[in-house]
Length: 333
Figure 1 (cartoon, rainbow, N blue to C red):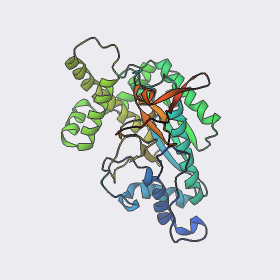
Figure 2 (tube, helix red, strand yellow; figure 1 turned 90 degrees about the horizontal axis):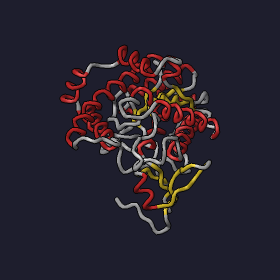
Figure 3 (cartoon, helix red, strand yellow; figure 1 turned 45 degrees about the vertical axis):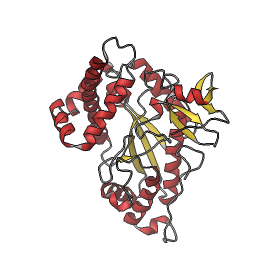
């Protein structure tokens, strides 16, 4: 199977059902739709051979939309802003990584529409403003990223996608006040999270992953390495608090939606992890990296400084978009 994000669309799952897809019944059709998602699953348990029946919650949610004859709605928190680390990204605006990822998501919805006539749509729940102050990205950069993301969706004709952010919820209030309101209403306590880090493998993995990102993205820190690590561990708890709060807010506004996640997830939990583009690290996203177009035609997410070693920068609309791999370059793993 080609890497996610290439020009090849996801291959629909087929079975012995003949005639219109709706004749399969909601439960069976839900399993076929979930079969479309499985090849692109971002798994916390990659060794597990997951099948549709291992996702009972998602099957029930899909069947609910199917039985009602309604478009299936997915929510995907993510696409927050670019990393502030210039060694990892090409700038603070969406680039080819976001374009390929959004195109893949739109194409996946189109494939679902071939099985379920009312179709499907994905709501991109951009969470940059939720924790922008914790990751040291200014709100005007987050606004510019989010606005360009919306423009990109319209320009590319991605009709199955829409965006949702704090502006859709709390309007023109100052961002510090928006963050405070969401935190106060929805966030778990630090004590609750500390207990979960000690007792839950998934929360521990998330805490470590966010701590690593915060440490890598620290630009201009003047203290010692140990002081930086302590500060990033502290901020990691706050990022998880805000992220959980954002998830609760989304669930309140879209209670029936199927929840997707850009983080690796085990089978059977409330979130279905989904890969956006091929990457060696399961935590890598388009907003923490740059895209290399390999000589074999595939696309891969890499740190910008590594991609620059393997290819030449390509401009689109006058700004860096991605890297075109040298004919003799090889991405070693």
